Image (cartoon, rainbow, N blue to C red; front, side, top):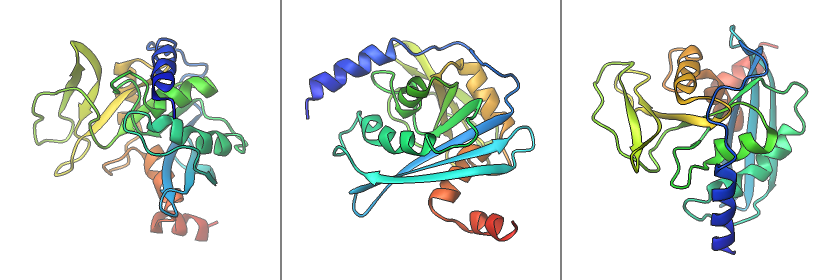
Length: 222
């Protein structure tokens, strides 16, 4: 594994990320959610993609792809491990989203290329990173109340928002993926909340990926 080559590719791709709003359709008709996990002790990469109608946030399509994992886990280079399965799931979608939420980081990454930015560039769709844990950067302490937020700062640059979506829950790390500004990224996440810690697109992607009760109920209701 040539880490130097991967790092050089990250830096090159990061320079191509569009950090301003560049929507084809506004407001979006369909908002996607993406979640990636690993099975069989990492041998299989599983990617789930969901499509929700906006503004109803009703689930209208879902796809899961499982492929052989193509590279080992290397901190800071996770997107190279995750995107092949995402691409496999993406290519099976009947509807492509106008905006995509990815469970992971966007530019809130040491080299400004988390999976939301990397994949957003590959499919050229407005993309937002919604991560559950900090990868880099610092932020001031958040208030306990829902809606409290602080900028995530790294090397003097704002790379995301730290936002408490729900009381008594750890905050989310929201960032530009591609073709979405930082402020719009947070606004769209706020627009897609359904009373849970996670916004509906990534919550549903996780539910589909893990076959959670909510997804089972949805299937049974069809």
